[in-house]
Image 1 (cartoon, rainbow, N blue to C red):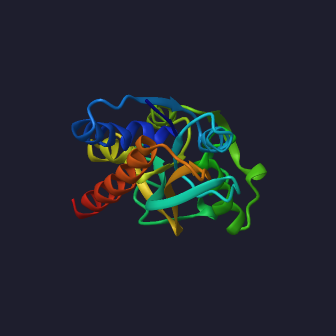
Image 2: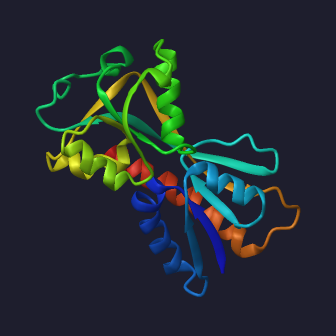
Length: 214
């Protein structure tokens, strides 16, 4: 058994193919997966309550080894026909004042969004937040219903954009999330944990590369 903490975007859009590939090579290993936002996963891996974590952020936690694997661009998402839907790029000043559906505290995407708005001269407390949610599925549903815009990673909204249910707009300046593998700083680590970590790093790199080439 290997216990794995995963943040929401990774759980939904990156983990299925990773586990499928891993089980093909190591059918006797049982992955035990726990979901939570990036902060939650980081805390529990550092406390050795989980063997490793896959999160959408880097980490400076001194008790962790953090292997940054790849990046994914962060985009604004709106429904078709929205006032911003034909924009090629969107700046912070164009989003301030519009209803905003935010992620819950501790989510890596929320921290990136706050940095983006601060860099544009707009403190996050000045945003017109209509809801804070931990479920990206619910956020996308509310965006489609016209409740507000949101900010999400490209991998998590590609299907809805392809189907015409959402419009994605790159941010100006562009921002990216980092997909990372976290491990406790152990002198002695079980072979199964090391094997899964190494497999995850290589698989996520390949997956990211194939999606960029698609």
